[in-house]
Image (cartoon, rainbow, N blue to C red):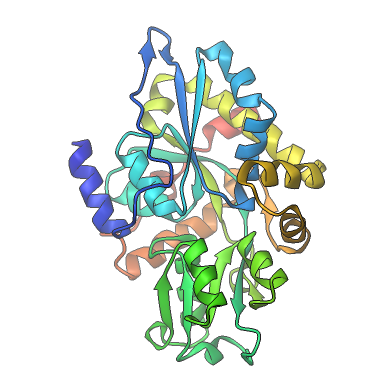
Length: 330
């Protein structure tokens, strides 16, 4: 069943290269449940909460009373391969854009969004010499962004359509952040639409200029979320509650200590601290934990994905969210 589902999701989400960290672990169980918690995340400032919880030792400390003796973290370039890993049974929870789970859940992945991670926080960046004057000025240009079914792909295509621009008139290339930034720097594409910190890195290196923030394209749109498997929800609800409590604690820490959060991100990813501080100071994103903030735009994502034939059925709030845990602990 898992193999079949994985094959379906690969087709649904696109053929993407395997995750950057390919270590494989089996789910270790005892009478109390799992002892190893496997977390997926991406190297984006959107997901600093996961890194804060890890670097501060909160995952290990807070989850040990529930029998968790080991935390394993797996880094992914984008949400598509991350969801493929969850489908394959390799992750228990995932920090991931809210859109990729739509395609995975539509294809049969038993999982739910249980908390928000952030809203907004991506920018459209074009070559410094381009005269950007609105979405119509992108016609005939090439823009690198995350693969179909991602937040960025969905937001950008909806934005173009809402502004009367035929999506087919813009050459939207599915690219991971690293290759997209390299292609822009080399002049092989005209722009990128990526989550932070990529826009700040490009801008500070003089390879592009930010022209539109994603919050201008789609006000207060959902971005990253915390996804948990139905197995964990069903078998260890108290553990899920604590995972959300720890996530809330980490989110509050970021908002209260942005400089320290930038340092944690820089250490975790070996990123340039100046670029990360610039990103945090200049992005339009917000770190949040309340999943109710993400429901309206996520349901709209599901509608857009269905209309673009990324999914075979239009998912509802009930299909995608379980807010009961957050409401109990917040």
